Amino acid sequence: MSVLKLIGLLEKVEQYLGQHSLRDAKVIVYLYHSEHNVVDYQSIIKDLDLSAVGVTRSLKLLSDRDMITISMDTEDTRKKSVMLTDKGKALKLYVIETMGNTHGS
Image (spheres, rainbow, N blue to C red):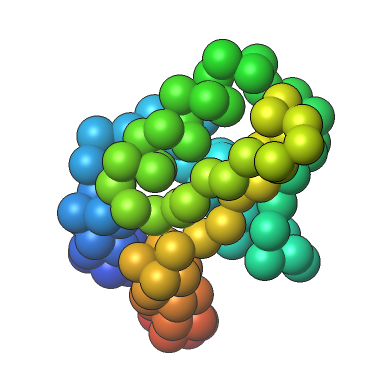
């Protein structure tokens, strides 16, 4: 991938996410690579080896930016589920297409 393409990709991601941390990027990439449409909050914590507080902060940022929705179990409010919104899926598609068009660049 050329440096200019990489910079363009990063600028596009920043348009969607604003200022973000590496932890936020890990969480969104995890959601992109998940085989499930709905991801359990505890799975994010466990699989990424992040603190509950850190994941909560990242999810709040992503939710505030309309990239994800968070829903709570009606019977057990400690259980949270996370899903990409249409905006989150659009960014995912953009990243995949951009990365796919870089082979041989």
